[in-house]
Length: 461
Ligand code: SF4
Ligand code: SF4
Image (cartoon, rainbow, N blue to C red; front, side, top):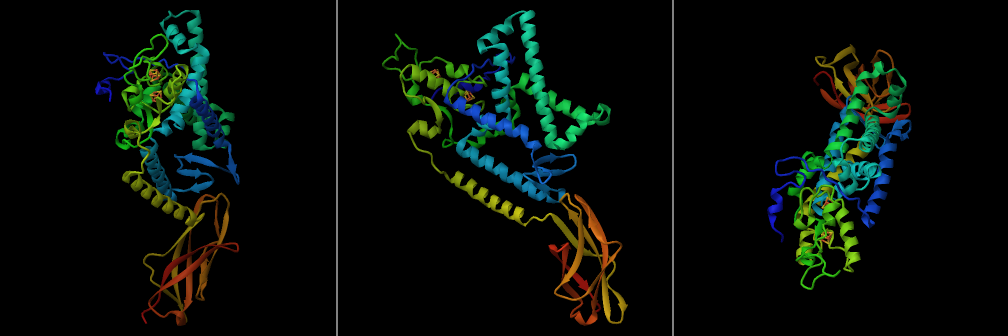
């Protein structure tokens, strides 16, 4: 194995701790083309999702200030918070499980930071400022006509794209209809939201124009977790040092007899967006973007050696040629994941659009309206999670009796709560004990929404 001293330095900072700007060469190759396709699909989803509706409702809404969440058409209320938390927990376990087996595939292929940085902002940079080498030269030039023009154009386009992302981000929070209202109405009427949107845009601009790989190296908590999650069986982007070492330059266009396949051309380092040398081994800075795989494959092709000197592999796979193993840790994570998925599915299936709780009014044991009947006073709380107004009526199950509302008929407005009080009167003859369990069905029209169990008190027998 190579020496571990590389772990004592940060590739993106010099000895004095100043930032070393990464000028990554644009990758070319099979995986980069595939990542481009995946990213196009990803970006289409990201920018269109807030516009999609199901039965007049957004398909996706994360309205944190009003605590209203819609995930794929399912409306979640604060009362459903446990469901939301369970979904988040399942997602977290999924990420952990996935990372244990597949390493940082998510970072390279699906993380918004990588997708926007590598597939949008860096491409804009290549388009305006030219190749990595041209960018380096431009930065060394004095501030004059050409440089001012290119830099201004780049930063204007960067801010415009960040503004678009900021608006889309806001649409995920407040909904696209609300966003259009803000756009149409005078600025002063929505100053707070405008400031929020400009804040998002400025944050995205700062991340993609200046912070860049620093987000993956120092900010992202998922990146920090890699040291705990990865083991020797995890799939990572790895350099096959058994095949590549000892490395050495070509002599007369050929690999020297006692050398490995690595010709020390540094192309894998030059394409790396985090500036590392993957030949040193798995490093926290590697976001598994696969650029070095494509770069090295192109070199292998030119020197007529088999591709895959840098490839997706586990450490064991490289060290001993072992195949991927399903380790006890992977089995444990799978078990927890399946259990959580089962519980989440059960909770989603049994979740209702209308929630009803019936409780007896405190301090009122029972009333005797006449010598033949006993009444109890109840409170009913109804939560309508849909957008439709629901007329509701109550009906006793398994016992005869009379339900009399105090006030008007119950109408629960869409997305709101309703609280009503009612008397339930039963015949004394039907009371076989002091405290009885009774079921009250809650109907909207002919549809029974749910049956609520409560208790009825009568005089001692
Ligand atoms: S691109 Fe391949 S051959 Fe060139 S330095 Fe990297 S590992 Fe060695
Ligand atoms: S080492 Fe390779 S896979 Fe890892 S970040 Fe650098 S280029 Fe991407």
